[in-house]
Every structure is written in C-alpha cells, then in structure tokens.
Image (tube, rainbow over all chains, first blue to last red; front, top):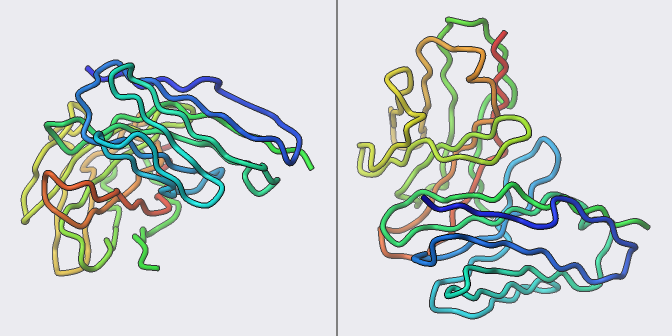
Length: 112
Length: 116
C-alpha cells in the first residue's frame, strides 16, 4: 500500500525566504505526482503535476522536482509572500488505478 | 477558468438521516471522484466514476454510500444512514481524459458534513 509522508508538518518563515517542502512515497510505481494548496476550510487547488517521466515542473515562483527511484518530490517556492501561507499537499497517482494517495500536508506560515 | 462546484458548503444532519451531496464537474470532464477529509487527517479516496458506472471504490465506500449522475451535469454522493464518523469534508473532483493520461484532478471547495 502506498504511503505518502510530508516533512516538516509545519514551517514558519519570514517573507522573502525560499520555501522547501518535502514529499516521500514508498512505492515508486507511480503515474504522476500532484502538488495542491489548501487554504483553511477550503478546497484543493492544483499547483503542479509532474509526470513519472519528468524530473521537474515549473510554474511562476513554484518549482517541483521528482526523483521517482528514491520516492521523493520537493516543492520549492521562491521569494515567499504572506499570501503563500496555506497547507501544501502532495498526492501520488499509482500506475494501475485512478485514486490519489495524499500526504498529510505541510502547513506554511509566511511572516510579514 | 472552469471550476468544480459543490453544494451545499455546509450540511448538518442527525445520525441516521440520509444526505445527498451535490457536485457539478467541469463540463468537458469525463471522470468524476469523491474524496473525503476527516478533520486533522489525510484526504482519502472514496470512489471514481466513469461512463455512468463506478470504476473503483475504497473500503470506506460501503453499502451506505452511493453515487449517481442523474443528468448531464450533476454528480451526487448519497449517504443512506449517516453515522457520527461520517463527519468530514467531502470533496468532488473531475478530470478530463481516460486512463493513461496525465490530466490533473480538479477539486471543488468541498461540503463540510456534520453529523450530530
């Protein structure tokens, strides 16, 4: 069974600092990995999707890397802003079915 | 940008009552999903739906749960007899293409179900 772990569980940084969020998964037979943002009491906003054949994906200040063989993905957020404060979830899709396995998330606070 | 919309945003019900959670997926999407998140826990998969039938379901999705696409736009999750442990945020999601694609899942804002 796929287990997805996110470390750290919480992170507090001053505005302007770069953020590094980690995601690890136990079964490397994945189809893709998706990073989401969740604001308190709200839904999940898709940030980036990395296909299993890709090493990284970029969107604006966000960059996500994937090392499938070691079961790791990292989300980098450059020059953090208070508006980046949220919980960030990673989710992996297995090769053989539709369901995503989620990590518990990293709650980020960016201090002004 | 097209969105997945869910109604209601919050539903309070008494134990043993039936509830129906409603979702309108993005219009050209073909695959539909329900996930849930119990407070303080991980988001977990419930069911996927394609071509008017269930594609896959988790162990959580027992006989008390059912899904339906009653018309061309709505996708519903019914819980027949709610239990206290059904209290959670329920998320609907949709994706555009078939198995083997890398289309991302798009989630709605969720319905918070509180069973008293």
